[in-house]
Length: 503
Image 1 (tube, helix red, strand yellow):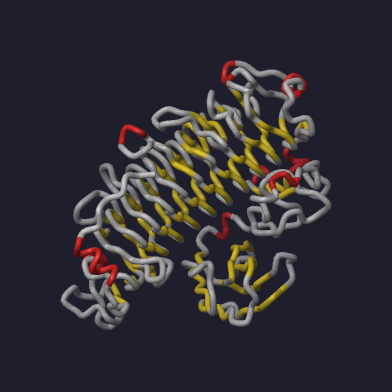
Image 2 (tube, helix red, strand yellow):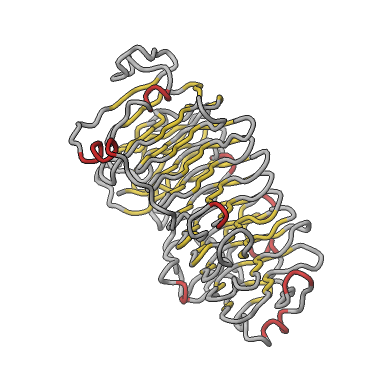
């Protein structure tokens, strides 16, 4: 928990005020001398609009290229957040903001939503999106590529929600970095790949103030691959995190998941690591590394952990006290003595761990098409119905949103057998949906592609609604709340799905 800052008199008056919400518009054909109250009278810069916003206001930004913006001491509320919303799928910030090198900087604020922006190629020490000293903020549906430091960076941000973002090719560090004493962060349904260091990193960092602990993090539904150092998910000074339904593969010179203490005030401990699929390449390290102290209260259930390294294996543990692990699919390489050596699974089981574990079959027997990055379970895979229900207070769906368990027992790994394939197909990376969760309408962005079929499916794969192929505003009125899949077939025959949550 961070040290709270006093709210200024001006901010208190703003929070207590009854000003009507205002919609502002920004366009590349606009002018900052305009009223900004319609697209026809839009502002030219997002930063100009940011200087005007109050609780409940929304800034809509039309497609085009923009300089970044800096928002400070702006305070929304839970009922009336301040929203910055891209109107299309091609709103790109490709120049730094006026104060820092970041594309978007949110500082000393609360209840801010950033939705649908691309923030690319920030120079110097720039992040694509930076949120600091700001609580109850949301970053969603954004894309951050080739930024000098990180894709998304946060610090001292209680109750932040980071979802449905794509963070790639950070030049120096990480895809997503949650730092300092930030409690209750939720990081879900993001894709992080090609970053120079970690996919998703958490660091309590006591030296920067606060208590140096990140409490109650939720990390689920993320796809993390092709990153180059340390870990897919890295946790330093994190207490009681839940880490589930993540797909972590092909991260080089890296662990799949690492729990430790370096800068944080405590070892990362009390972790619930459930139903992840972790594939470590031959130049990787351990599937899950649990350093001394991180063992306390940590549970590892229902994970597929396959390690292609010559001798490193699936779980490396430095201290066995208070640690639980079972119902995992593993290679015959484990360690209760840290990173330095490995023992067979039988020796690990002699310590009381993974008594119901299975030695992993070949990836081609487990997964639909592992060479192409499709880790859905193959028919007849050993993971089907082989898991435990000890995870059921946390894991109720799989990474695709399908209910768990689908059969007589939980499946092991991130995917429940029978969930629609292709939900993360590379052909669908350019597809954008907003808002999501949605009510009434959902807007579909296909970039330069065009579709020949669009269908909404329920969790059983049944067609709920058909849309005309040229539709970009999809009417979902009358559809019961819940999780669905939008199946999109492009003109060239490629097909994929995107999860849709209907409120």
